[in-house]
Image (cartoon, rainbow, N blue to C red; front, side):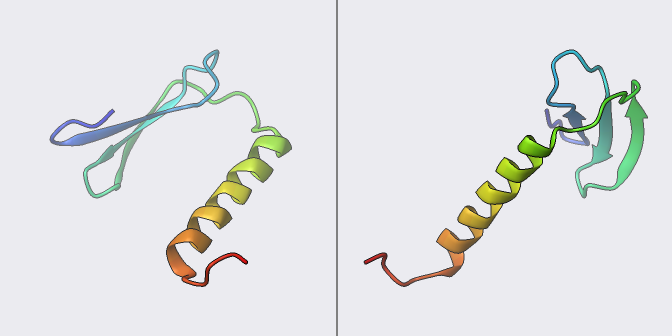
Length: 65
């Protein structure tokens, strides 16, 4: 969620109540709650894969044959 002064970030795990507050320039303000779990390796791999695809779509202009 974003307001005119603060961005609020929540953990993707719905059972976790951890979050971070940052200003509009993404400068850390404070944490909220306790982040008590690790992210699964599969989620990290999928997120990295998606980021690579997005980067390639933006940067590469060669059509796929």
